[in-house]
Image (cartoon, rainbow, N blue to C red; front, top):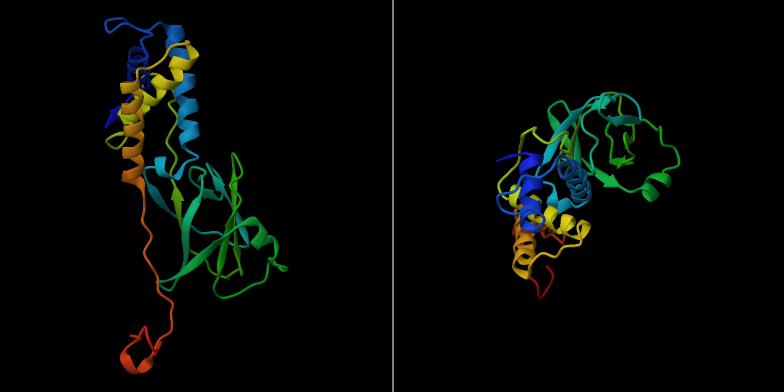
Length: 231
């Protein structure tokens, strides 16, 4: 669905009662609204359930680490977070476990070589992040499942294609922000509609993980067990 900053801001100003239904916003209101809209998008980019897509990024780099971001070793938009990753070798995919900074710091020799990397750590620094892998293989092809950010609006009239539901959620959420800026109040019904639009986005973007079972196995009954005897 096509969305522009101008239509979003003007709609939000009318929802908040700052503009009358037939009034056109001034250039000052448009500029202020663009700043507020991009602030809203920036805040949404920190929340997993407002991210509308997970992108698979193929990365080839040598060594224990690589920078990720525009024009970096891994040339893509800097991810908010890496949701998953695997290492591909000879057509076979090997999952990588995503670890945090404490676990990565506990690795004593971070440059140790190995046939297959086991873990991946992402710093998430801005504007350029860094990806670390361990152990370090001689050949490399990594697949990173990254959270794609909502793009900030570069100007008032560039059209952006967003999934259904985002136009309404952005307009009502921006109306809430602008109402406070202009010392206005939205009606309870408008607040309810805005909250409902945001909940709809979160429901659409939620990913329910599968349940893995690693309990005891019995080779004599094809992996099935008796919950009473544990056999």
